[in-house]
Amino acid sequence: MWMLVRADSLDDYWEAGQGQRTLAACPDTDERGDPWRWTARLAEHATGSEVLIDADPDYIGVQTSVYANGHTGVVERPAGHQLVVTSLHGQVLIAAVDGPWERWLNPGDVFIVEGEENESLRLSLTAPDARVSVTMLAPRRAAALRWVP
Image (cartoon, rainbow, N blue to C red; front, side, top):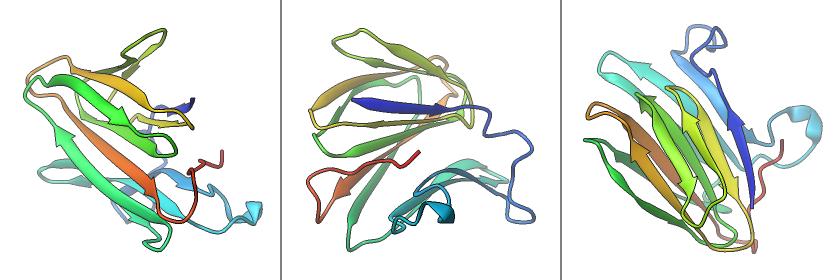
């Protein structure tokens, strides 16, 4: 399992005039020379935040769920898939069901998990008004997706 936590996405890095902030992308810069596969952006609206996923449909399947209302539960990440978790409002605790790690996400933080083994992750929202976006990226042509840091 590999993971990335990119914090402080609600800082001053918003894309000029777009109302959106790029959280993560694969690849993350054009200079890498790798073919583009996906981009995750945080969008701010009058009604709140949402995560927008733009992905090459020939290579990646996308499924997004938003959890709220004090949700606590387990999310299963199949081998080779990537999971993009973003706190939209309030704190979210994400932890490996079998240990040994856990991470707190604040609004705008993004947490990406990938690997070649199945994984069970527990999501715990700390307050009734907390909301978290969970996106599963599934490979369509390769055995596994990789995030290019």
